[in-house]
Length: 110
Image (cartoon, rainbow, N blue to C red; front, side):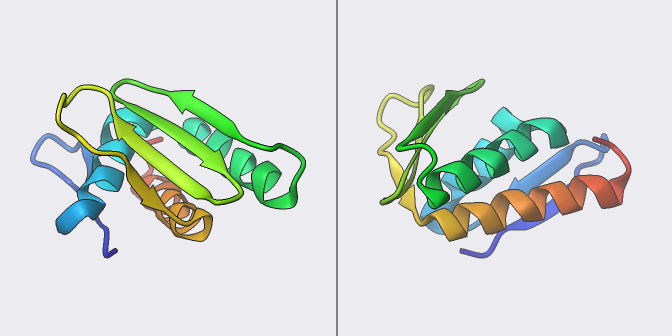
């Protein structure tokens, strides 16, 4: 999965990815938006699930539900009726969310 982060003409943070990875890009844009705090919450939850301190974790945002378990992460689009759940590994999700945080911090708009 190759995510690209950029700012649109209005200066809004955007993410894009080809293929099924678009689910991750949509999640970052619509549910985390420009909130580094929301992204940090997910990174903490990843730490807890990966370490075994929590068996699972779930968060429903603006348009997606994110579920974490030791088996991996699932992003479910709650808006698109025909959307299938997108599954990815916890390290892959960590990389995407950490990249989003870095992008936001570099842009100075969090």
